[in-house]
Structure formats: C-alpha cells, structure tokens
Length: 314
Image (cartoon, rainbow, N blue to C red; front, top):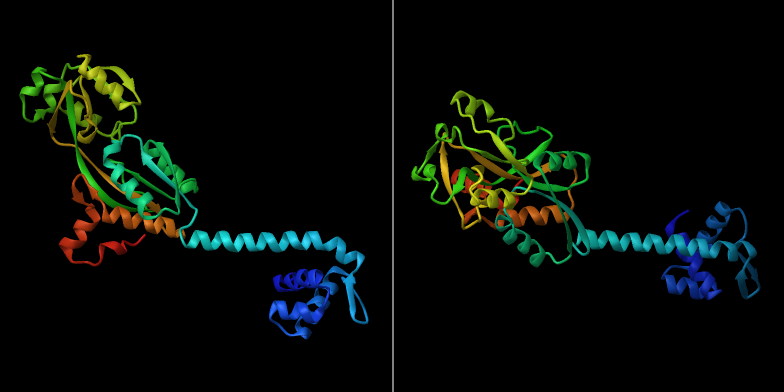
C-alpha cells in the first residue's frame, strides 16, 4: 500500500469524480484509476462503484475510509515532526550535567543554547559523573558535561575538553592552615574531613594521602556542596573541592601541594548518529567562554593551527 494511493483514494472519496480528483492531485485521470485499482487489489474488493457518470463509495470503501484517513494523517504528522526536528523546531535534547559543577560555570552556555536555538527543548539531568557516563552509553542521554580525574577515558566515548580547574583545601576564615599560600598535604594531618560524597576523585587519591601519612578522619558526608561549605564556615572541619565551587563568605580556599585538577569535557558516544540539536549544542560550547577563557579544545586548535574550532568532530 503506497501513500500516494491512499491520498488519491481520500481525494476521490471527497470529490466522487475521477476528473476532478485528478485535477486536485495534479495527475492524469489514468493515474488515479491505476492507484485505486492497486488499492482495491490489496484490500480485496472494490472501493468505489461507478455508474455511468456517477461514482460513490462501496461498503468496503466506507469502512476503509476512516482507517485510511488515520494512516494518511499520521504519515503527514510524522513528516512534519521530522522536518521540525531537522530544522531545530520543537527538538528535544537530553543533556547531562555533573552535579558537582558550579552553576556559574554553565549558565552562560545554557543561556546561549536557548537564546540562539529557540526550537531546542532542553531537558537537563543532574547526576554524578559515573551515572552520566552510564546514561550516555545506555542512550538515556545524548550528551553530557562531566569530569573523571584519575580514571582512564572510555574508548566508546568522545571527549571535547572545555576547561580545567584546580581543587583546593577549604577551611574556616582565619584557620591556621590558611597562613600557607599553598597548603602542603601533610598540613592536613589531624584535620577533620568534611567529605563530598560525589567527589570526582573518589578513592583514587587515597594513596597520595597515605604516602604523606595524612590522617584526617571523616566526620561528615554530604551530596551537597552548599552543606559542606556551611559546615566548614561553622568551624566543623576542612573540605576538598574545585575552586569554582567555593562560594561562601565564611571560608578560605588554598591550593594544595601536590596539586589536583579536573578536566571538564563535553562527552558524546562515538559513532552514534547525532541530531542537529547536538550539533548546535557543540557549536555553542565551542563559542562560549569557560572560566573566562575559550574552550580548551578551541585553544588547542588555535595553538596548533589544526582547523576551524567550530568543526569539532564527534
């Protein structure tokens, strides 16, 4: 059953005249006749009765008409939605954001996507890096922004570096360890540790603290950085977090020696067909500033002269 056959049937059912139906469909009358015969062969009986100059629907034609109308309308809707999708009109996009990235680092990017591409309907999922990675691979997400320091990159995924930022020790204002411009890890020995449950490093840096014989017992754990900061400000311990997350007037942050940092990337699945919306999002990521600098991938291209940063391959 061809879609043009259904269209010709519906027009003829409306006009009940082969000549007018042919004119309305902008085809010859024999074309209408052939299409109706093919449809009748497939459906097993006559769809119209022709009596001299008069044409009317058969019982089978009347029964089939609402079904064929539904098929035709659904096909037209599918074509329209596909065109909207390809032209970024009413196009859904599922973006995962690592829950430990400070909103200030992302708002300019999100604003640019929504303002420049009003047809994109952005759905944001907030989760730890491990969950975002799993959701990307399962197809729950199309693109994600996260960091996995201390962990090898997955060969199934494609990473576009956006920015790098340092991790710092965070202590109450006036705390003795803040007398150091750079805090040696050994200086954390004996401090009470306020643990970020979703810390990107996880247990991957434990051996460094063990080598330095640093014992800082965990006295509090939370998924929320704002609670960690509030506890630090209250003098209940010391924390370890990315510098851009330190947003509290009652705390001070100092870099550590040895230093720790995270490379935040825009991540997609290698080889998976991408929608135009993903392409638009990548373009905005390359256009935006990250921590007041161009994206790391853009800076690398500019330094190496390797091509147009707008054409980052996924």
